[in-house]
Image (cartoon, rainbow, N blue to C red):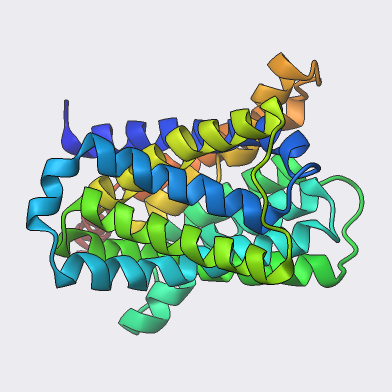
Length: 298
């Protein structure tokens, strides 16, 4: 299988897991604080990877810790900003604003690289953003303080995607992930302790959510991203991640008996079209068309 296709499929699988986490987390955070939950989630993910790949730690070095720490910072603040914001806004608006990282990634890259995105990237971003709108937005478009926090989270996560592209190839993906998870989990646990919210949960649903998110939505997903994102562009990665509301809706359909609407299907198709446009190299085709018109003028 082509490595680029494999990267896209694995990131799509991880995004499915992200979408599924909504069902598990919804009940869990009503019984335990968000920081406490995130602490257990990330520390367990670090422990699982550490046990599975303990032989890799023979090559653990300063770069693994340094780059892991650099990636942990935007990941942590993105989670915290999103969590604060979702306490004051609706899930639908929060999902749309979070997905706007698909817009912020090319904007930030354009600023860094000091050049505008290509035409196919612009089309891809517009399609993905419109698809997000179909998936998440209702009739209400009013903004509040929660939306501002989620907006900040989307910008920070866009920065995280770009940083992964820059640093993932400089260290072993497993060691990078373990460093990230441990640092994020440790900060969350310390914060919970300072707030007086730290305790060991006893409910089955809480541990079900912690274990599922730790294994699939954290250990698997972010390790896949650390290893495979170098084979596709940051923009394609952000478009893939914008599928999360679609997979959340599909999960809700099977587990909560919520209806799948035409808007859901249309939104998913538009995001998929965005991925295709992001990966199509159109510059050469436009050049050929331009050359043909030049020939006709002669």
